[in-house]
Image 1 (cartoon, rainbow, N blue to C red):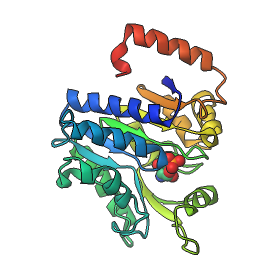
Image 2 (cartoon, helix red, strand yellow):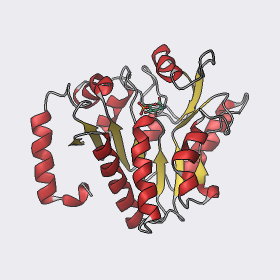
Image 3 (cartoon, rainbow, N blue to C red):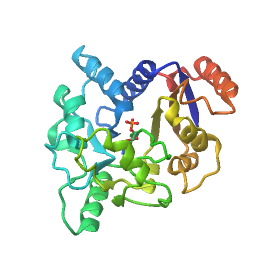
Length: 264
Ligand code: GLP
């Protein structure tokens, strides 16, 4: 596990975009796992910037989003479909046939739909690089606390805390969704490489538990300790409860010296 410490969300966005861009340049037909949320806005801004400068081509990339709210059609302004279109897909050249985002409008037969989402990932050869945010309760995707570490794509009931966090994005009086379709922790762990981004003090407890705590289904992101190639990119505020910060800084210095391609 590599922990990249950066000053603020601007630096986080730039660093993550740089790593994604080099993965696409190395493998133009990359299968890229994507995430939503405020933390990701800067990443997409930088990726769009690189594309507009002519230095990044997404024409052969295939994407798989982590999750979508159940009950929200793609056109709903709070859907993750909408978020992805506004922040990324409308501005780059990902072929629309290669974009996969769970469908929030399915009714019944959820298992069949989720199995087909997993099959599409397999058909693409598996996810090469998965981008992740983290919830205050340590969730990745919408894998709420107590999600099993082997879980696959499925319908998930959202926790009260997550519903409260999400309610600020919905109009007053508009109920925020109670369920979502999300990739499972087991699905996420099969990605060849994982990048988790976190910014701000509100994420500091979840970040510390994920990196330095025991592996437990009570903190979904702690399962990432089982993965061989995970990079956390976090700002000073999100890193504030880590006890080994000095060590991570020293590792970063040595990484820059010995294996600089891990950082760019
Ligand atoms: C939602 C998404 C997660 C994301 C989290 C954090 O819960 N399902 O994938 O990590 O939001 O969002 P933010 O970056 O806005 O804090």
